[in-house]
Amino acid sequence: MISVLTRITKAASTALIWVAAAGLLAMTAIISWQVFGRYVLNSSPSWSEQASLTLMIWFVSLAAAAGVREGFHIRIVALQRAAPKVLQKIMLIGADLVVAACGLAMLVWGGELVARTWEHVIPSLGLPRGLAYLGLPIAGALIVLFALERVLEHFTSGTEAGEGDAQWS
Image 1 (cartoon, helix red, strand yellow):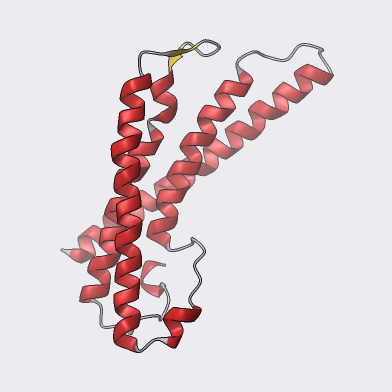
Image 2: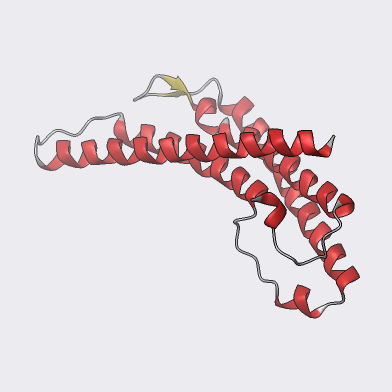
């Protein structure tokens, strides 16, 4: 069961990284076009700022979710490494539960933000404002899933606490 979950979440994480990278590339192209339009053509497109901001919300949120799955967020481990092995495992599980709680907050309050702003239109894009924020609850749900997967991995793995995230590579 866990190996199936691991395969699915690994594929989802890889897809998130690719989508986030595409969003970053698209935002870079849009900003480049805006700068070219402003300084060379003397007329910058009106939609470029809102489009790049919307893309940034999406790709940052999705990359953050992938970061939880892949373990590439920064953490300080000095206290953890100084603790006994049993306490290290408890600290890792506690940290993953805190991350899951943050993901749940993103899911709930991000979903509320989407619902409250869906009727508002981004004038330069003609899209619902809620669409710009939809990446927040989606990423929140994925963060909860990925963090809980890590908790399950801590309970079922035979590896010592603090050995790193080799099982996630």
